[in-house]
Image (cartoon, rainbow, N blue to C red; front, top):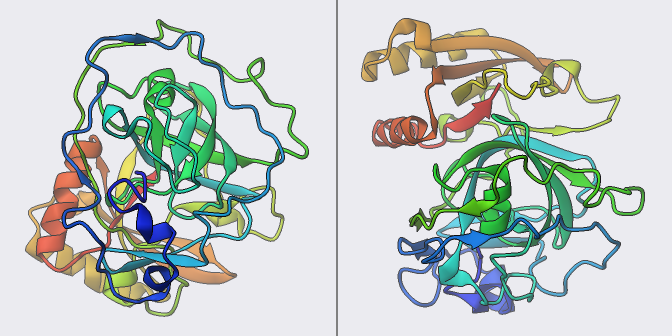
Length: 331
């Protein structure tokens, strides 16, 4: 979501950026329950993909780090080779015309998006993993700050990916290097069905979420859930940590990763703890082994989970039980 929707000063006032406190002006900031689609259907069939071009980083919106609700987020110096999968959301009329974190006005009918850590601006290809639709957006804003959302799409972009009705979608975000890319409106699927979306209100509630944390052995429980981010086209990246290719139309599975450890015993102990405190079938809680930085890693995952709303409810229950940072994994 727009980082400065209710608190634009947050990205323009150095003392706030440098302070460790989570206090923001205008109480209730970042909560947007009344955001919605336009009152009448809007035809976006003529809205084309963002065209990647070389631009300097924005003067605003690119601090080394910033704080939202006591959670510090770190802005990447480069967007090159960034690939991640997760849940996308969208934002609409409530913020149309307001200033984004980069200083540009938000246009809900343009192909733009918000991201917590990529430098502004960044161009990215976003793929709906459930239907195969692809779009190109310009990331010019900060957010979303609701847990387990990796990108916030403009209204038009959400229509193109067909996630308006559900409010969320399972996506892959792959950054584009405009210096070498010739991708434009002719090379990316603009959507194969009607591009007019119904006017369906979609509340947006923003909350803090955890940034990537370096892996230690073992990880503290509160920091054990890792973000599903990989380095693309990097031969030094561990093969086991690369994302599996998903063919459009094939089943997409949702998991919650609740822990990652350097030893199996710690992972098995967490599995037992979850089984004891949460009414889940034993078959739904699994320990999987992988490789991270050439070391064995044991991940504790719950799933597969049927859909995003079910995952959100499970995340809330786990938080009440002291497991506050599970992370959505798409496989």
